Amino acid sequence: MSTTLTTLYTRFNTPDSSPDSITNIITNPSLYVEVVRRSPWDCYTALIGAVLTIWDLLTTLDSEVAFIWRSRSTLTGKPLYLFIRYAGTAYQVYDCAVNLVVSQPILVAPMNLTERYESCTTYYVLLPIFTATLLYAMDLLLAYRALCLYRMSRKLVIFNIAFFTLCAFSTAILLGLAYSNFEAIDTPAHLKGCWSLISSFVTVSQFPGLIFELWLFAMVSYRVIVYSKAARLWSRKGIVQLMIMDSLSWFASITFMLVLNTIGLGLFPMGMRTMGLPLFRGVIIVAGCHMIIHMRKASFHEAETALDSDLTTTRGPSRNVKTRSVQAVFTKPTDPESFGTSRPQRRPPILRQTISGSPSNTSWLGRVLRIAQRLGLPPPLKQDLDTLWVDAVVTINRPPSQDIAEEQVELSYMDTTTLTAGSDARVSRGRDGMEGRLETTGNRMNPHLWWVRAQQGGPLEAGVHNQPWTFDIEKT
Image (tube, rainbow, N blue to C red):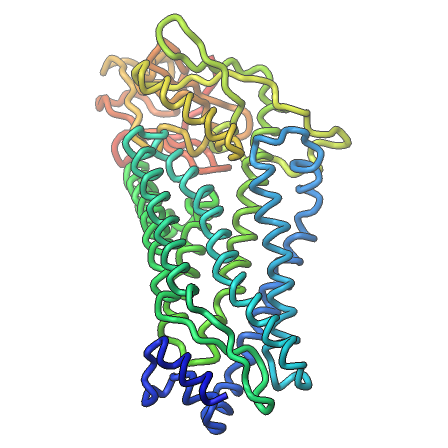
């Protein structure tokens, strides 16, 4: 046994003087006892991660049946959902079982050494591979939503695809280097649990995913801050409320867990370094599944409630391109119960969506969205595609000396969709000659620049500079 340990020690060049040296720990009973005392934390977090995943599966089962299983469409987020939900849940249960049965010497009697060696080898091989696969599957969905906030900017799409590919390959290479010489240690009889020698590449392999996650979080945070400032929502409460209501808080949650996981692998003491992994995977599974259900629910809700919408996507002056329907901006999707006994349609009716910009930009946006859905991503949220994220200021052209209450005004800013104002009222905005009638209790206002803002599920507000006014807006 000492020869085996010496060989492994030499291979990985681990100094005997290091307090975290695996050679010192498994040959020194006092050091081993200290590690054993900390090891239950891995067991606790594995159990919490498995319970969290199963609990979320059970509590969202009705929405899953309505918007995943009953839909026969296989190209609108279903494959990605099934992988994250069920492959992720299965691995969480497996991870919990290994921690409870194999790697916790305090809780169980000694296993057969051969069985423990084989179980630990399989566990340590699957651990990094499956965790990284779940992370990048979720990053694909997060990048999709982040790019929607920029209306699929050509430069950002190309850059993010290249960056995502680079980070994924870098992670795979670093994990390959870390585990190329990996070997579980066949410990003496008095030592129980999973012990192994792995290089520092395990910690380094977390950096590519962390960098990409921080980049996505920066993209989303920039859009939220710019929108909040332009729409007069510049406050901590406004930003936090906006992020939570638009499901953008998942970006922050996953980024935080990834940072914590990276710090744990590199700096936590032996016996606690992997304690963050089950919780990290649990957050990924819950966030990914909730986001996909939310996006599919919005698509079905739009198909059920907005069949009278006639929104067109144009490639040029004389060509229209049909795309899938997406959720009306700033409107909350209904729960499955709101559909009554009716099942979601096999495919949402094709609606048309007006997309502003030059013909080339419009054509690019339509192509990217269609390709994304063909690759298995869910329909985008219309609130993510709304141009309010790009420019929240709306200008209204009107003569300076007319009574506002009787004035018919034309909105000069193209928003492409409709805003919910109160319970029933809506306003249509566009550069293509569409007009909206604004009625207010104000009399005469000389300034020409008006602003319009709205929050999801909240009333529409408008005003002149910093002076708010209440509008009743009718759809023309």
